[in-house]
Length: 261
Length: 348
Image 1: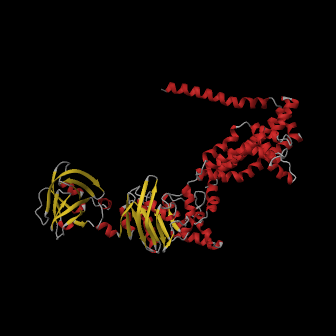
Image 2 (image 1 turned 90 degrees about the horizontal axis):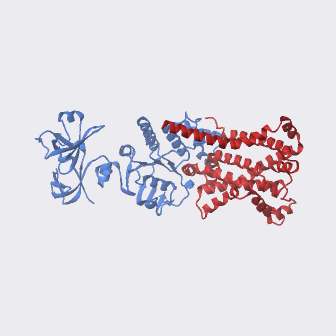
Image 3 (image 1 turned 180 degrees about the vertical axis):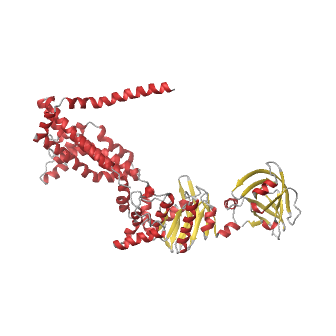
């Protein structure tokens, strides 16, 4: 029995290690093939700086703005039963399964000058295509399922009895939502927002169709690769990955920090 | 003051049927029944958490049956306390105070007052996850009191508390009631009900089978279930065969001290009113039987000896008597039942 167990362990560790190496090796290779000088020079490149700033700020803003609608939807999905709820749940997962270039085409049609939304924006002097707003819409489209799912799980984990107890204490349904349900689901919501933010800033396929310019970093990497080759695309990739990892780790740590008891 | 009229409700394969009772202001009513009998459901309908399929609920002659939960002002203390885990004790108590538009000083004072009333004033700065079950229950009570409810609806408030905490909580509940709070309390514990209630409602399989003072319930239980629930194990369907004799379960005759009119009903007597002896008792007791011992069960009050005399009779004797009579399973023993200890309840 003991021998069997050890053999099983050996197989599990070997296969698991291979899977882990599969993720680590290409990234490590990229890091090892980039000299510190190249990284330093890339960080000084104005175009790179601007694109990283644009990527982070647009993804962040897109997460915040779309959360205003995504969180109430998550609450409805967690608490109410309604006709075609399963269909709605399926629709929410759609952006994850469709090709992101196809998503980009869909969004382009949705916000172009010929569309209603595009025309309304034009009347205010804003062209959505090729604009950070268009980028934000494309980022949100592909990343919003992560927030909705995480927030819904958060609301589902709040005992309904706590909400009923709050009502019983005389609180209005709105107060129950803001002072009981939302704070108790906040950890999941925050975690969903971090995922949405991270997924949004790494998006390429949908964004490149909606807005080649102004250039977000994934598009810049693609452009450098197309124009100058691997050697020029690699340092930008490394810098962007470092920035993403730092942000992701910092946000994760913030969301995990528990209040003192 | 509070009136429940013919409430019925089907709920997850279970049905509450035609529940009616009323509660006067300042009264302590206990709904007593086994787990799953439907007691908590009645409480939840009073609080508005669930709406009845039929029937009405009135508060001071005003129908509140379909009133929103937050407008009813029925203070529910849930069995699992439902203290908000993300708020400190003081903020839990302050939660219902928000509706009362108090100044910051008045708010602080009110928190302290309600905390003192429920004896949690030392815990105000604590987080719920650091509190014991008894402390959480008290916080839940303080918070509910802060909502200034018309009455307190208590769902099994003493369950999951150890003996000492249970006594303390019982005195707190009694004290709140003495201060004028109307209480409706759900439990499965008969002693808890007796010790607190002005009125007891017995709930059995979705029906309110009896409602009255503890004395009425105890002395005139309307069914075998209630009698057993109240701790009386000797309860038999009986027929009066002559003014001084009743026939129990069509098997055993018992002599009664006073004249009975013809009819049917139930005979009952307490286990401790059955006298055991090794031979026939030569005494004033006229109901003597030779019995076979079926089983002996140790209980906190002594030894419970169940015997067969054609019907099964439960008796209760001290440990000393048990040893003296050398009672053994399947052994023979004599029992005597005092005629004056037998209650006959005519079937209505």
